Length: 308
Image (cartoon, rainbow, N blue to C red; front, side):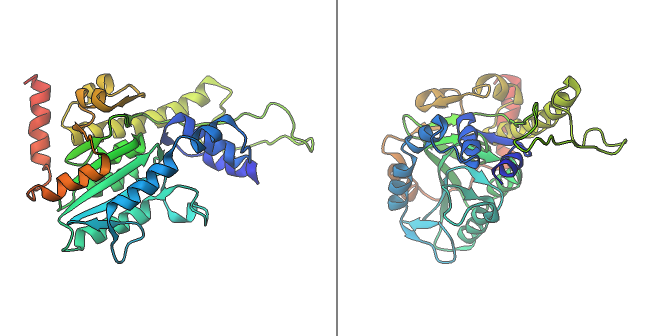
């Protein structure tokens, strides 16, 4: 069974911090003593999440996890991101589902008590499926949307928060990890029962199951994840009001930047000295404003291309 779970994990593209994907694969194989699992367990994310929940305010009726404080609706994006709740174990496993996030986001949009929306983020990223759609939902919000990153706002999570009007981060929080990856395994020896898996595909569908032992097979996977990365980078460029060339050269090249370095690179807008609590207080006292419009982003992007 664990082999099948691992195969399912490796059958989809991920936009996630590499160490977290390694930990997810190790947990699928029940290798709970794997160093990657220990590293994730000890990185302090559980404590950060509990502290954030305590600061966000009272639960909003009709939502799974959203809260409201002083007119600011807070939506937590904690842990690895998966497309649907059905993919998460009953215990939750520390993951977040996009379908539930989207439902909560729409409730915040419709609630007249919510003047502004804040995405409270501590996520290494996740599966690329449906990330673009949720990012578009955020970008098209009729209410101002900002994000605060307390630990990580990386990969798929950064794809989402790049669409808000302002990103604040803790002094040591990391953002970036822009890119896509996909794993695979090759059976070199028979299994314990002496069997070896063999896959046969129809003659007109050689790319249905690429042979990863060949350059042609690896090229098929490479082309697919490169095309998803192009969509990722395009979304980040539009959201941040910079060119795609700037994203490719200055936004970490697959790595991450923290705190002031991220602000300097234009990956974030400010370091929030008082963390999530400070971000909520500042947002609550600011006059309501419309979110950055697509026209404003287009103008900003045109200026960036012209070197203005």
